[in-house]
Length: 254
Image (cartoon, rainbow, N blue to C red; front, side):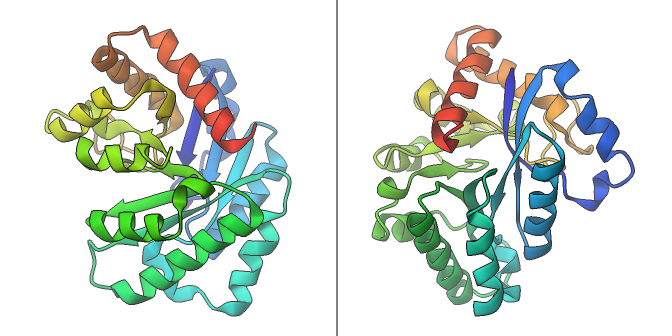
């Protein structure tokens, strides 16, 4: 069964058909989903989804674009949620320099705090890094990220950067971008990364693969991603599905 390692089914774009959509997954070969908290409200909703659906597990963290909402009181909530049985990772957390706010200093501070939290609660981290390759890597290295473990979600950098994360035994979340014609560097990186370190993800509702690019993304599009990886690796679609599920279960302790 396909293992969806990164989706946001708490997002309001799923409000009209969430139950119907999630209910269709098993029949379409989607076996397990990790729902990712990206804000405090998203984390709360993620916890609720894990309690409602047996096949959904969760990650709790605050996305770099949302760290302005963090303070000591609600950071304690993250720690509390981490103790729940079906919460299997801290994140997504990291750095995003695409927009000017929040500023880099605030992003770095809360990124480091979430890395420390992951180490303390013994959970892997889910890393978001956009236009911030150097700073993200330096912070993870400074915190001995290899001892924490985790995945670089929506990996978008070149194979030289992939090598640095492989040296820390990290995993790589690969989604719809791998199907884009202009994703040359990513395709080179995926060809280089061992299959034992690749996870399937969608980042739903974002980044739908070809031929659905620009539309709302869901885990039902994961076969397109798996097929693209199979072609790059010269292995079967079934092998990609089987290996990425095993990888995700190993990383998240399932």
